[in-house]
Image (cartoon, rainbow, N blue to C red; front, top):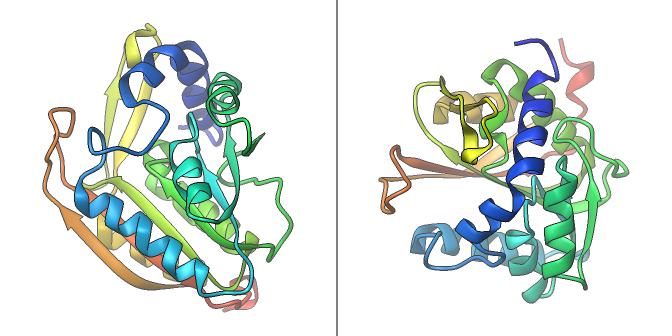
Length: 227
């Protein structure tokens, strides 16, 4: 897959299916779409970030702003970012008090070291394994030293899952079931310290694979000078 193709494919699908997607998942984190373990890790992220002096965080790959709203309701200063303008419109409509901007996982419109935390809630599932390093390096760039990253994704062996009619759009989209050990290794290579990993079995009808979660912490080290 040529660089950037996975971004364009995801953008096209979600621009075309925003209304249908929002109808399915809603605009808030809820027990209908997140298991108790999932919600507890989001709460743990809030507690970890809340221990610092800055409460500025980003929901990267925000979709309709579900995680952004969860974080904002608990006192964090949130910006949501997504590549889909239709999703951003849905997020702004549902959560007018939260800032939402266009942004790409590996090219964020955010100053270096300016965030106390970042959540990527299933937003890396469209990124091929070989491209994860660039994404994690960018996420580390925007985190302040000691800032936290929470990543959620569908777990597997790194295999692609190709759909020719993604979300009823008649458009193709490939997702990746990342291997937990590969994700943690690439996070560490990007200069992040892995603090928590969790893996739960499928609990919802729409889940066909284990769900993985990682909390990592920025060390503030510039890995570009290593080697």
